[in-house]
Image (cartoon, rainbow, N blue to C red; front, side):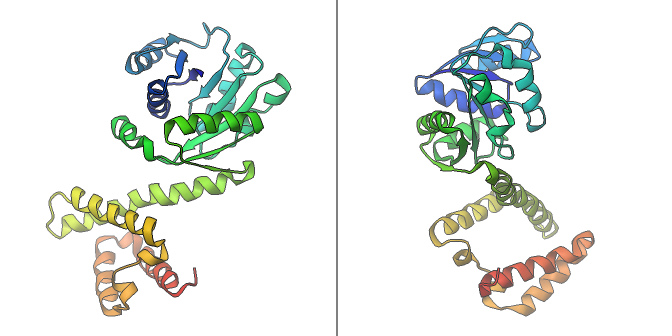
Amino acid sequence: MELNVLGTSKVALVICKRLVERSHTVRFVVSRSKENAQRFVEDLGEGVATTYEELEMLSGVVFVAVPDSVIAQVYEWTKDKILPGTCLIHFSGFHSSEIFADAEKLGFHRASMHPNLSFADPTVALLNLSNCIFGVEGDPEGLKTAIKLVEDISNKYVVLSEDGKIGYHLAAVVCSNFVVGLAALAEKIYEESGVEDPRELMSNLIDSVAQNIKIKGVAGSLTGPVARGDWEVVKKEGELFKSIFPQFTAFYDQMVELLRRLKEGRL
């Protein structure tokens, strides 16, 4: 397929790199900054860098790879430069493709394909992309196009309803971003305990939990003092936690209650 990219995000770069490997082509890369667009093109190895002011007519697939807050605005800027029959796709986990408000009226197809993957480091993301599960939705033709692209990236996806996107994204935030917050607490406690660089220790432990969830499910993966009913350990460790993080005193008790309910099947 012929692909065009509005924006120069890490997500777009990684996904386009994989699709170019699968014989898709990138035509235009568009940014407010010609330099940013040129840098994207150089990293990708193909495409024509341009700005919104200089933009020519677009066809094929248009990736709208900009922050959630400006997707609608960028669509308004560019829709008069898009030919009927073109498929518009964004990568937001929060918004549905209905953000392309008058797409049907203008003869466009629309979809979204959200990758459940961290793109903090594009090199790491590209290495892990073949295992990435996408959340996809759209109108019938747009959804068909998005699925075809995902099949060339990882062939792993879940089909979402348009009104289910917010809940889907919230679950992803809890599963990924909240884990980073918990890791920050763990890192501080490890350092207080004399472990100088706990990053490998933590990542190995988190990896083992992830593997258990994949094999045994969430409830079957619970281990530790709450799972064993070692309430004296829970109490003593709670005292230490609260001494290190007095601002999060209630958090420890709430997490213990959450794990207790999970263990008892009451969540």
